[in-house]
Image 1 (tube, rainbow, N blue to C red):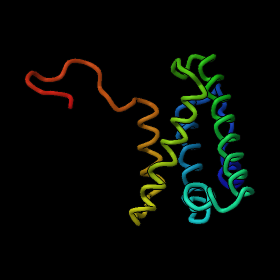
Image 2: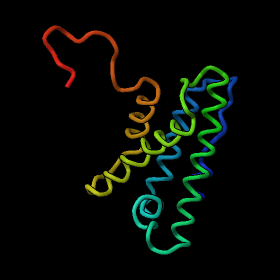
Image 3: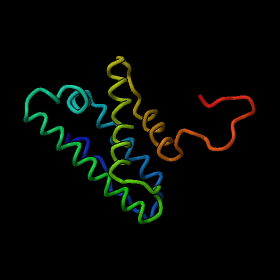
Image 4: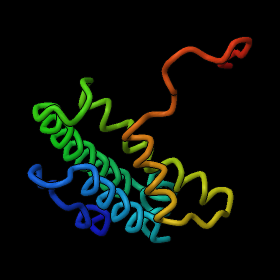
Amino acid sequence: MERVEVVIQPIDVAGDIASQARDNIERILGAALDRGAWRLLFTEAIGIDAEGDALVRDFYARAAGRLERALRTGQALGVVVDGDPRLLARCILGLVKEPIFQGALAGEELLVGQLAEQVFRLLMGGVIVSGPLPTGQSAW
């Protein structure tokens, strides 16, 4: 758990925020993709015993809290969208966790750079393109 936490670098608001965020995403994913880390954080630790459950809960509480504080700061600076920072933090954690978890379940090898780029693109631009659909097409 500490391997994942220690790779996060504070964002220098005087610098290029987007590239620093992208670099943090890649470092976090690199640490989380370590086999021991993802197995512990995403699959095996919950339910082993009360101590393991407490450690995982503590990790997620610290990760979410740190991310929430960063999002609040970003909102105050005008570089993060409005919204509930606690819920945004949980959504971002899921955006990082789920591809690793599901990739592991499928036996896929995940490439850190590729996954980091996709997560970064989602954070920067979302998924849905606004505007009218071409005539005759349905969104769903």
